[in-house]
Length: 437
Ligand code: DSN
Image 1 (cartoon, rainbow, N blue to C red):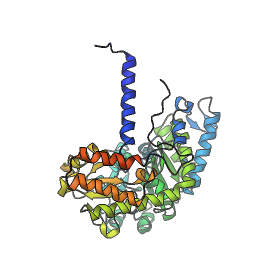
Image 2: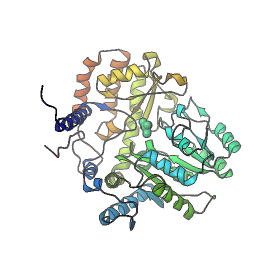
Image 3: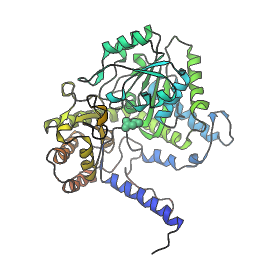
């Protein structure tokens, strides 16, 4: 038996990361919360920025050595303000959930009431008592949900808002098919003096690309997001604000947000991902509108193609989706769990998802699967490829063909889509970058 050295341990990890990269090179990646960063944005991740500290703000740091970090942070923040047309941006949060915690820390106190979309209706775990909202000790009150239209029930939600008078009202979903009804609810929210917060994680790139709702122009005070879904940046977070609330002055609101992030929920932020985000923001200013439009057209085409092949794609009457995501009820085909496992064996990566009508104990085999078109769009696929993808789904999920016999066709389809689009310079999408031999 060969002696096992610590270098073998390290090589084992490298080998698995390489195999993972090869698997994704040969797969259709369709998880609605993921994407791939551009080569230029990826380059920032392995720069010296990944080794440094820069607590505080540009020009007011607790460490020396930040001259160029400051320039990058100021510029990335400026790009974020420009992209979202807002007076305030913070590019320090290291993830979407950390951005959410920063907002909660800044704007609420334990026991405050917050109105939220429900996790079981497709919201993010941040909104739950067992997530960020609970960490802050808040009292979450859910909006009633209209399952037919997969959206907040406006009349019911206005009634709840008038009754509980939330300090903060949160919008945003993880199964995000249609814009949230902010315009319809803003008068009621202002009447009870609620601050309005929009978690845009899933749809950040669609909003920036001007192909979804425009939360700030509809009245929200603050918006958070992760930056690696429809905005195809690094795994990072962001806070944007244009406060209109009369609860406090704009200056006080923004100061609270700033302190909420540091020292509230961060010590150091991650400088390499912040620099990488700067690149992605510049790329989105250049290509975002074109990219966002194609994502939505692809998601709608995928919904239509799957519907035509016998899938129960939700919300046919509304055109299936106005975002990057479609939701499919696959209960009649065996449920989410066996299907996502069969799809994975055929190199199609998706996730099972609870649907609003699922019993709470259905988590191990929920009725739904959630599919996102943003990464397939990023590698150049258009509507005709969505039809080919739907056919592959049918063979596995409805015809119950052996995934092993479908996999070669998945690999063949994917082999024609290996380059990243909508970015500076282009390049290979799924490449292992060797630094140490
Ligand atoms: N849980 C992620 C999602 O898949 O929607 C977001 O953080």
